[in-house]
Length: 95
Image (cartoon, rainbow, N blue to C red; front, side, top):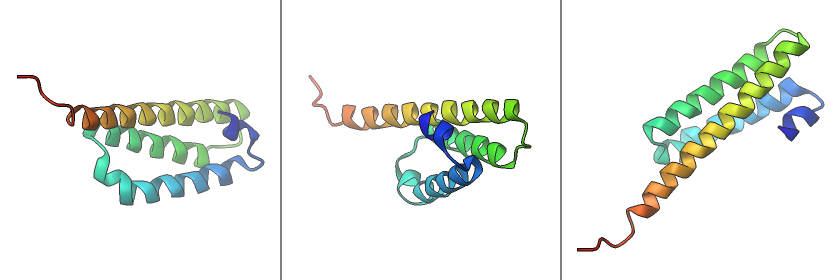
């Protein structure tokens, strides 16, 4: 969560990151995401939007930062699982 904590302007940082994530999802991501990973992708987008639109309540901002961080990690885990499945399919089958 270092980048979120170190951002001088948290909302701008998350807004820029969200734009990059959405661009990736519209191009490469859409081609490789399973249903589970796509669901995690949508969760991350929603969490980022909540943080961007949140009131300036420091407690709520911390909660939203943690939510974004957790959603990002769940998406990364789902993508790793997808990639593992893709490579598992390349393994020779013993008969």
